[in-house]
Length: 254
Ligand SMILES: [Zn+2]
Ligand SMILES: [Zn+2]
Image (cartoon, rainbow, N blue to C red):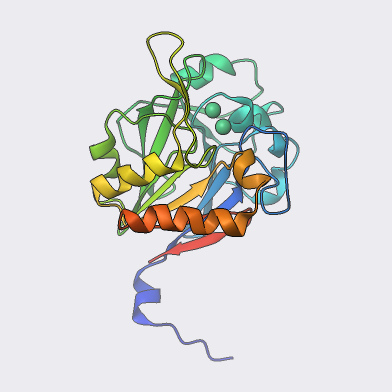
């Protein structure tokens, strides 16, 4: 069979995102939101998984992973590594302190705000407010043409302007749409910022598209068609496009 490739195809391989899981730290699960939130970034045949919650324990062998990155040490982001990992795992020091007894062979430490190249893609960890016990980061992920920010659990991003500078896609926290889930038991804010606020961040930083993952009960148990139009409306008011991710959703970045 004759294969015809366009010039673009020969010169550029598109980075692909696959939402392996889109469920937050809740009991409810559905077919659309079955597995704990995780993003697969694929590039030149390499597969990099970001986050590995408890649902992934014993389910990693089919994924053919080349590397894994972790945002923070909550159960829905890291307990899938309890029996080890089939590839090198990159994480900030705060994560390693929490999971030091996990049998992971190839551990790699990520420094905050210092981009590193993993299988041809740049990852930069931006510290975010979310939890005092499990300090979290979001990853700014960049290939030659595209930049996205993946921040599944977030109250606030201190370096938001730099994290989102010229980003094409913001992938954010769907724990709540408009109701606040933020508390301040001590000096720090903890919890989850509503989708509405995150869309305002996109508006302020000029990010054209938002994808909502890490879905909470409101989305997972609710009528998703109604909620999807509510989120689209909130986004539209801010000049942003938005959608709710579901398990298995793929986005090709070009
Ligand atoms: Zn979470
Ligand atoms: Zn968390």
